[in-house]
Image (cartoon, rainbow, N blue to C red; front, side, top):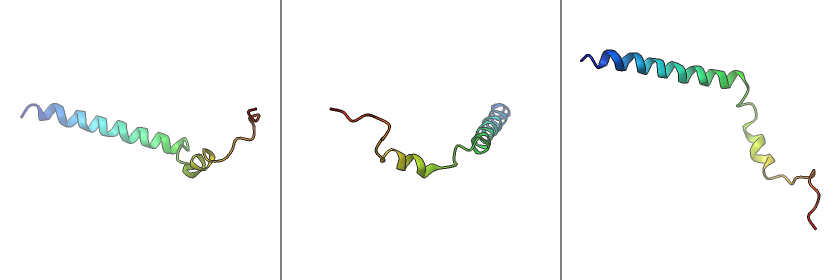
Length: 52
């Protein structure tokens, strides 16, 4: 039963760290445009010169 006194605080700390990381990604707008990257990969690149 003494192992529970170690495992419960460790699991709470890991859960809190995961929540903090998720909230950080929300604040830094990493989920702002999820469809943009999917469409951008299919669009042709007009900045590159055509290959001869």
